[in-house]
Image 1 (cartoon, rainbow, N blue to C red):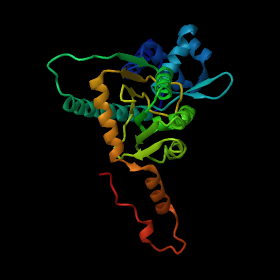
Image 2: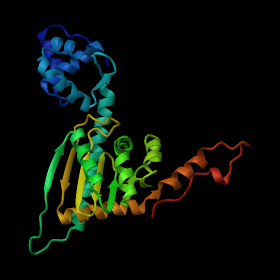
Image 3: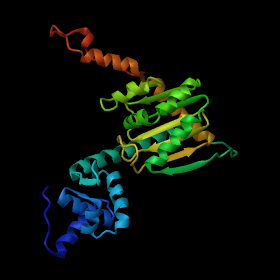
Image 4: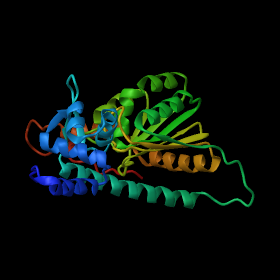
Length: 299
């Protein structure tokens, strides 16, 4: 798709309307159109060209970055670069599909596993957390407060972020005798992170994985369900949402789900060793029974 400067207010209004139809606010649409035209610019230049107040421009650019429409170029001052719409649309489509599937699966299993009681029991607490740094801080707090068990069903890139953010916490809890277990879908994108995390944590591979969602249960008393938006390697920026609860029924239900995923998974050391054998070249060039893909599957 080729972007050109439309002549006159009518052409600009049409382009602005199309950008807003993608789910952008008027300010986001203005800033993104400027970046599409220029390729990359400083925040001050974008603010001037788009007539966005300078006090709002960084908030607008951060929102576009969280939506996957803008990337940040390492420079002083920072430069912002537009991301191709095709890549944004494809990623957004996959995120929405994955979120829909995860929510439907979790809701169905939760409803099936929670039995109604004739008399009300303890309701516990429910708290909502927004934005990546806040969600990550709550996760670290839960891990560091564990006394017996931490069990996690992690999204693919959650494991990558955890290998950079939580290793000190994992190491400290492991030394204290806390059981640390994580199930995730092991892929080429997170394999290096798995190698790091499994030094302190018992990691299992689960084929279905958690697309964009992570669940952590600590000591059977609290649960945190996180939706990563987007599920990428960024440690600080993301429009993530996390629901924390101490409700006994909710905690027990999600503990069952997470423990079942871990029990059905393949130990990471087994999967990684099989992958190494399969990928190792045969000096003779002949096929070998040791290089055939493993047929083992989770029970």
